[in-house]
Length: 178
Image (cartoon, rainbow, N blue to C red; front, side, top):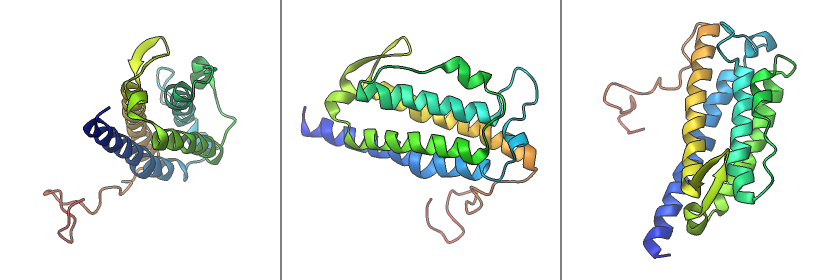
């Protein structure tokens, strides 16, 4: 591989790791930590997921698409169980489980090579490249983080304050960019 490909792979992996570990994950934790067991497992209707289901689902997705695929582990994911779960785990237990999985994912992102990003994989019945798998995990996490943030705001009836320093220009109140 050329130097340019390696540099591009490094930039992509650093950005992906930053999005997951330094932006989305801390905000996800901030959403979930104050919730009671009842709030974590609350659902507005049977067609909707609970925060607990979404956290279990993200744990399964990250394990399957990022950790097990790149570590060449057997796929043992039980996706239906992620959505069938109903109560049982607290916010702290769910966050601990997902945090441990994200730590494994961060290690994978730290060691991936350009060759692994370009290599073919079959994950959940899809034929993808490693690059696709990383992108899928980051995008998927962001989607469900947004759902969790919305549910949390609805349950708590308050703004979460993640963007309180932004003005309409995209600059912080001190004039620096975010």
